[in-house]
Amino acid sequence: MPKKSAGLLLYRQNAHSGTEVLLVHPGGPFWRNKGEGAWSIPKGEFHDEDPLAAAKREFEEETGAAPPDGQYIPLTPIKQKNGKIVHAWAVAGDFDPASLNSNEFETEWPPKSGRMQKFPEVDRAEWFAPDVARQKMLSGQGALVDELAQRFSTGDH
Image 1 (spheres, rainbow, N blue to C red):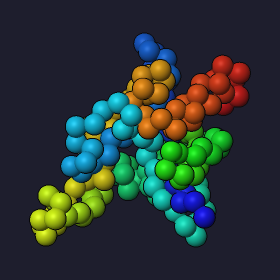
Image 2 (image 1 turned 180 degrees about the vertical axis):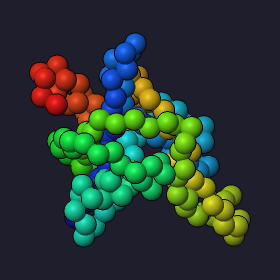
Image 3 (image 1 turned 120 degrees about the horizontal axis):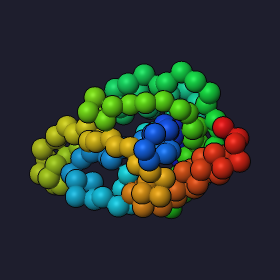
Image 4 (image 1 turned 45 degrees about the vertical axis):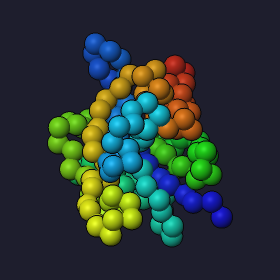
């Protein structure tokens, strides 16, 4: 059974640049110097939980902010290169990246040192125009931004 993840694609309308989407950058030493192809929607794994409830929980854990009130638009689940299935919902809202307050994880660092260190699960958040977001995101997740853009072009949002 493939692993499952759930997340939120937060979007807003900017008077100057149009639609923007919020992406987060994974924390920890492995991701420290990775830019393009590393960013993601706020998301995380779930098991015996309602997928939308998991997406809202993960948003709060990774950003420190309550998930927005509003209409949650289900997006077509995607399959990432690692086989994980990602369930996502688009929702309009706002978030100040400077207020990011992510939960932490613990890992051995440096490897084989026997020393455990804590790192934020997410080390930064940023708003991106859809075309820039697609370049920054993990490759499989770009389809989520494409689907949101398609919904805006057809007025289905």
